[in-house]
Length: 241
Figure 1 (tube, one colour):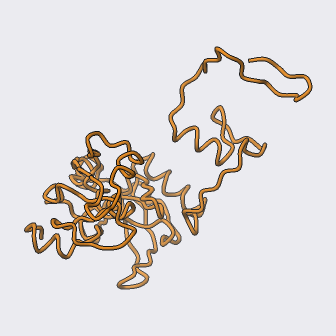
Figure 2 (figure 1 turned 180 degrees about the vertical axis):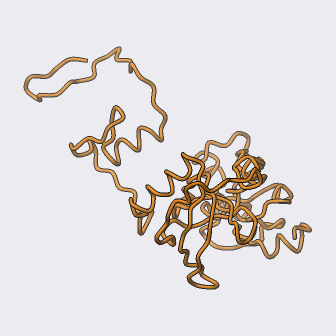
Figure 3 (figure 1 turned 120 degrees about the vertical axis):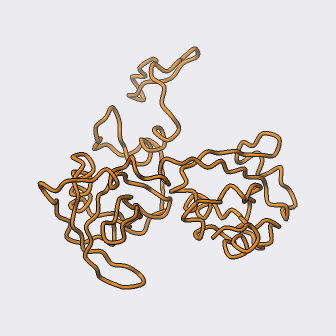
């Protein structure tokens, strides 16, 4: 690195090698948000960067209560707005925050329904910590079977594409196949986020379907498979209930 007195900046010269290694996610986050060295910089980003993917981010106050509960392994009482039934009060034991690509949700145990569920953070109101409340083993993260189960998804270019090699290159496929391991609890979100045709006969049509799930049977036992594109046909053809 050499300092250019005219440009008033450091210039990368031949033979430059970085001292620290960062992942692509870290680099893109730094470019987008201006983060660096574990603190938030006030300076603008080095290059113009946009990520217009979320319409509304979670409230910091609500997020703070949820993260305290996760860190301290506590239950919280929340007001939650359901699409099907409207406003309801619940006690949940949260264990993980998840960005599903469109919105943030918190995964945790719902004491009323006695099962692990996903709660959209932007639908949570007035969360409060339940101090002194005992967390049962069945409510803990260790008991969340869907969270700890892994699913292998084998993705290939959609057979309807005229130039499948374009998708092979875009996704870094090897021999026309991209194999990824995801948690069963997030499999449905991943497949919906990327518009993956999950029908066994790749029956979905439209320019948005660039990928096809080659091994639909991998979704057996995945609770949120109903989120996947083509799930009605998948249910009828694959024996998934």
